[in-house]
Length: 278
Ligand SMILES: Nc1ncnc2c1ncn2[C@@H]1O[C@H](COP(=O)(O)OP(=O)(O)OP(=O)(O)O)[C@@H](O)[C@H]1O
Image (cartoon, rainbow, N blue to C red; front, side, top):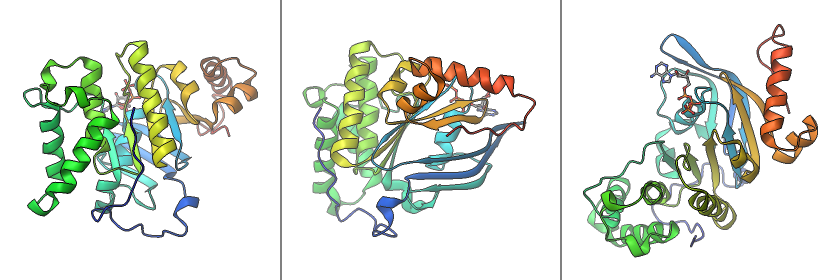
């Protein structure tokens, strides 16, 4: 995969506090609570997502991963508590071009080519004739980033599932976001494509210094992350590195560590619900 470094363009908004920014986490939550319908889906979460790393958000289906991601990118209603993203309140309009978000369903138009899809989203993000050269540059680079240059003129509807996922990712990479929020980006992909996508995520973090928050319910993907947020039933069960989690629980794999922590939480179920292990 080809990943270019983040060079600020005239379209980049100013960092609110450049001198202190590297020290602050990309995402910081305190008492984050979200109600959806009749249910409290996130229950007073405290966590931090460090900059320039890949943080995996793992847990069983329905535990609240997508809700946490939607809250982070500002598309979730009824969010209470503190949620700071890149130094601003989540959902702040100034964050729009600084965050890339890929939802679970690929958001591409089947009757457009890969390049036309990217051109369309680039025009939404950075409109106007004066920005045409910059848009063309961003589109070409994003297509190259996800290794789809040879398919740039193929209709999205004729691509494989994995290639369509990569078109969605290319859309999220437009404008060189500082934070990428990827909701189960590897679901349904074969092992080779999964490996290639994880290589791309690492290249984005290492070469651009971007922060990635990546959800999955496949525990072996946890091993590929710098840090993990393990979730269960709307709570954070653990916030640590894969090595530290394995060591602390005496487990060989993150999956075994997760099961250990679930058993531990069940055993102390009569204690107060909020139990974050660090
Ligand atoms: N629109 C909604 N109204 C009410 N409850 C909802 C709504 N959407 C999701 N929920 C509930 O919120 C909880 C968390 O859902 P969420 O999609 O965040 O989980 P998830 O961990 O991302 O699951 P998955 O891995 O299956 O995508 C679930 O119990 C779900 O039933």
